Image 1 (tube, rainbow, N blue to C red):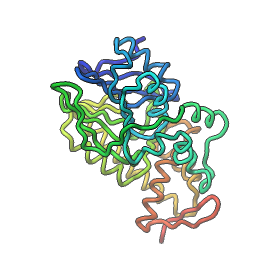
Image 2 (image 1 turned 120 degrees about the horizontal axis):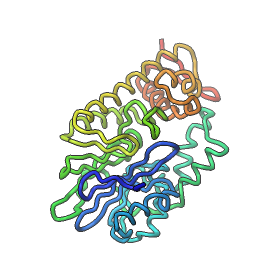
Image 3 (image 1 turned 120 degrees about the vertical axis):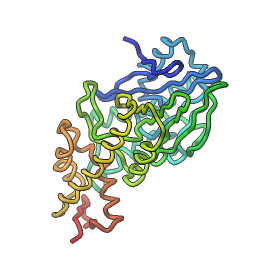
Length: 321
């Protein structure tokens, strides 16, 4: 079985798996330099990235740029391992994500353990051990990006860095006008994150609702033929607009059912367990993963004055009359 899929001449999707879900890392190989978008989890460097590079006859010293789309373990965990093999490559990330990307302990505390104190939601046991192992070792970032930077891969190939916040504050994408493609990482999620068979494995995990909606609008107004996400099948032509609409519709539906549920005081955990199943047929075991998107909605609704934070341990929320 090949460890990569060729999308265009010089553009490959390195193919791995994370938690039973597809993980596709774009590799752009130009005449002057090669760019790898994301590094997977820590074990993925040996697990599928290096095997794919060997299949492509591309030595790690050919990598000129490694860009993390955002601060998540399946996109940054391989940073240290890959930089040991390709020290010449510039490791880059979104400016707002730098703290978490450089420091696995900070990413665990600020992303994966962020709901413990106020909401009694946290990972433990095997799940916690897997997260920590996947985060890998600390690795300094060489360069941070804010969007608008243009990167030359060869005499006839320039790509542009885009700032696509929502899933994280510093989320980046790569616009490839030569192939009319956007390599978008986890910028938009549709209505689900699928498993290897295409069935719902997780709900969307955006964090910053208004920025996420702005990113959806931005992407649907780009002139594209291809949208390439890390966990979803490649979207072509009219499928791009449909995926953007699906992403927006999920946000609208999630907010509506959360408001309805807050007719009585509820905690974030109660919302995840009771409202989450109304939004999709994912396994019951992953309902707590709605904490990311639902936590973002609670913050947005508070900012709009539509719900009140009643305090308590864990915190309770209720819709305003």
